[in-house]
Length: 387
Image (cartoon, rainbow, N blue to C red):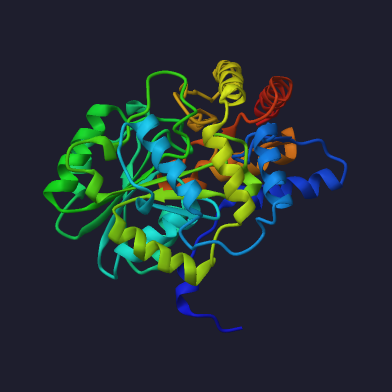
């Protein structure tokens, strides 16, 4: 089968590959602790489910406007003002099936062949995948452990130039749990304005923060008109399977994203959008309980990781991942990913799943019970002792 050559440039998300391997081992009778997939293990709050059921029973099962139903776009704009302190209009909002389309639309709409796109590495693999797919030049900014996986601003200054069309930031960050400080964002903003760049700020984990507070670069002077805010419902409200996300951006760009949405998805499921409206307007009690439980799990897994020979692990400030340094084992990330799955029954992801600079690290999601995390830690400890 002969495919278009652009398909050779398209990457993937390894979490689903490892999940399939883990499921195959489970089918053979092996017990697996799943710490590979970035998905809250909590149920969607009942009030959100009830809102979807009500919408279904009210015949909200037909096509909707490509950028989203007006009621949800208005609610998202109001939430942006409340949570981020940024005043936007419903016309600035585009709703999509999950947040990934916003990544794809932003890179597709803004980056041409020869343009440069700066993105975090290690980072969410779809950034680099789509940059390559559209023929632009991926320019990684190395997130170093010694900086708690933040940008090295001095290095960043050397990367931005007249060819830079888009800068991608993600805070709190997948896979490291790192958070960009307000000072980091201010420096990034200065350079974006100096070189007339767009910024795509991935804020899907903004509500899962344990220390400090979330700052959006779009709130800084001169940045709202050159920023695309990416957010969604999957992580905060445990709605991964609902497939609902959104972008907030200047209206002329929102109009172009709507055209892309029409071409690719037509629209986001209407009854899902009514559930999303309830998510933003309803009580946050269950979200707060979830975040508190994630913090408890974080402390357990970080403490445990630091007792395993050859492992050292920083305490992440947000999201629900740890990214331990495993260089002390003398093994590669890919080797340990496969070894721990088969020998320890623990599914994790190689740091290289998130870019070349992830070599020497593994990602573990602690979206699992404390009991299972403790089992995983003990199994890993025994497996490492056999190396």
